[in-house]
Image (tube, rainbow, N blue to C red; front, side, top):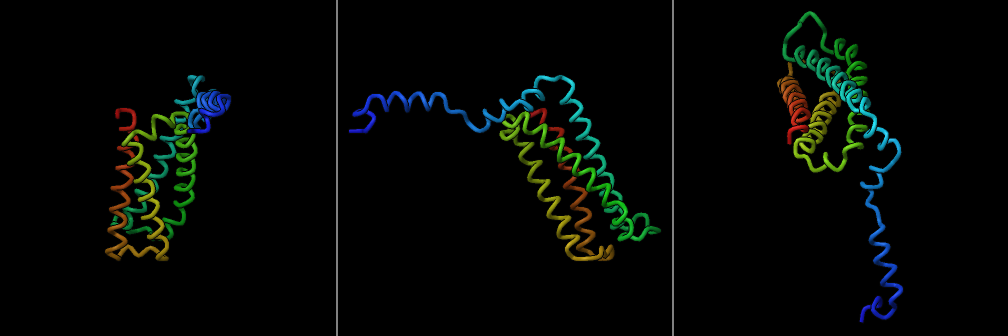
Length: 171
């Protein structure tokens, strides 16, 4: 015989506890800053603008370095170009990550079930891994077939990230 059948008050308290338990996602959605974010109409569009600016900085700066790796703009040394552009890339990534994370937290229940969002996050990890491998090899050698392949892969991954980001609203 189950213990809750023997002690009726235990059965009542366990049903009450189950009825009042709150999932971590539900608790997060009731957190005051998230409620404010959801109920203040101007905040989310401002976050979206910041996110787009961050993405533009990331993609724009990476595009320049990747095109240089692929042989465009030969008048610039690829390593010097990357050195001067990297702070802008990092700033753009931080802006996109901060605004993206804030938007994610405000719609976490919707987004974790959205295939376009899940794919976008996977692609971001792929882009980061590609960049880590490129920079872990030392100075950028634009004559290397592997480096050129990584530049093409970088462009394609970031285009896919942008496409997935746009598709989030439609899936």
